[in-house]
Image (cartoon, rainbow, N blue to C red; front, top):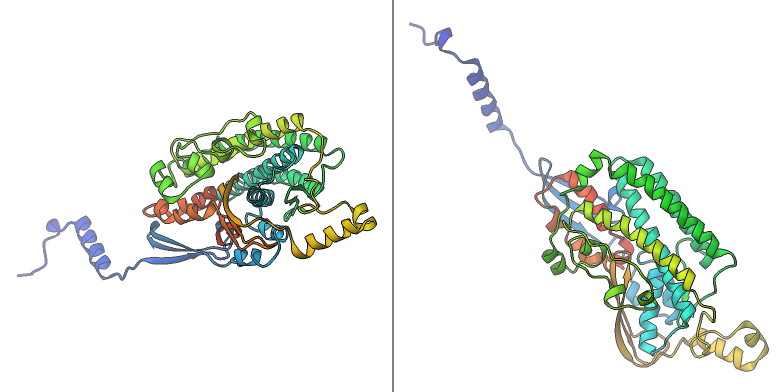
Length: 415
């Protein structure tokens, strides 16, 4: 008698499933480890992300920095206070003016120096222009990496307009070195205000198009909403500041909490989010672009006349006629250049609201012309440290918009 089952007793579906399960039992599966960076277009800087994957689910994401480390702090401690400025340019190089002015503000606080009112207004104008440049870069890059090339080109046009205006003001497109202890390097160029206002009008037109292309795009919105989420408590525990913190619903902006320069004389709003996800962080930047526009226009209307740097040859270089024509002028010039500003002994912590959040400076002076200690509290460092917490358990595709909206800038994170 045959041992084979009768045809009516066999079940092809069950047999196929059993065969498939047997094959899976013999398959050798293991987790995948992927390196994103250090040279990867989605990392926005020279940073390596070691990602452990189970399928497309992220089990662990370990950011590794150090590829751009330049010894910023020790470099500053070996030059005069004024010679630190080119190093500060290279922290968040997308918004260098805010690095310059933040450092100078801390030095002036250490000296106990108040700069002229006109210089304060111009510092506000320069800072807000570079805040716009930074946010435009983020908006364009986020759109590009989620498939929107047209918004990227529109935003790039707006960013170039700002870079043109900044280069007219400072003489450089990227590394400005425009500020000085006690004020500024030079006054506004003739006709510059009108050029800036025209550029701002054009940028607002471009933003209308960008919003229409992205915020009504189903693919873009679905990939942003509900991804890269962090709550307010965790954000505070990590040390978030700036747009990433405000996206969680925490109302904290250094310009409002501890006003500096002339921010308390200007009318502007601080946008606050709710969900702490990529979409809210993106909307923060879009709204802050409008608020920076408001601030700059008000500052131009209120801009007073007067000097742009203090008239004290112990701090500011003497005018050229005095240097070339008087012994006092040439001696003061020589001593400032060779020995530096003699900052009184002491220590200070001071902070300004940079594009990514609270940019803090801890400075120590021993009374000489060079800093004894320089430490910068870069806003991007604690935000980058949270990436593992935010992204673990999520999809690999969610890592791209998350890295976009935290806006990691290698220069400031690694110093």
